[in-house]
Image (cartoon, rainbow, N blue to C red):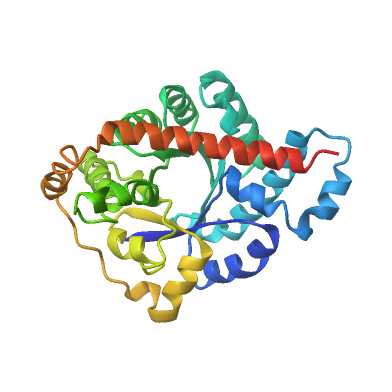
Length: 318
């Protein structure tokens, strides 16, 4: 079974569209990140809260609001959680802690204690400090969302770390950023565009599934389509795979709703790793070093999250 989680959050949305989608069985989880909260806090619905929090530091204000919103999402999803139908809402640690394992663990524990919901997942970036934090948190019984995963190596290290605890975990494999980065190079070499993202994601999915851990799944992230010539649900069509999660922006969910019932969607073609590797073998002669691309995309992702976080904190200063 493929789960659909919503990759968006703001308080008004939680009380309306998100609640409706959960009640209708369309969505059974939610993910958030610094960029999502940065956009949410621009909305009028938060003005009153921010007034009441006057005198606190920007990060304290952000956390008060974020905790309240994640609690609301968890409560909306509580029935799903009790019935074993996912029901998780994810919140990310401060992205500026990217290389601080102890700081990551401390913040994750504090957020977990303040949210006070068993169905919260703590998002941790997948790097060396993150793997240490994931392992320690998993051992403490905290559900983990390993994020900013681009490479098979990251995924396997995250899986190993999360598996040290008896918890639920997802490994968030970013998809569309590969294609936005590489399409022009591929076109110059007469190679198929818009394939690397979902091929790489399926290769990682195959490795995670081969590990045979039912409590750890692939989550396909960064599934929004920026290429105007592609359908909005392009990545959904290619990544609707069993024992996985698709986290989708609201516009993608709405687009799918127009043409098909979610429970009638067909599984995607199960590409084998050997076929994906055959395609990837053409990349090196085309001047594309995937290992370098993995690192560049991770660095760019961290930079974007840090910038969004700092921009958001700056916007709520007194």
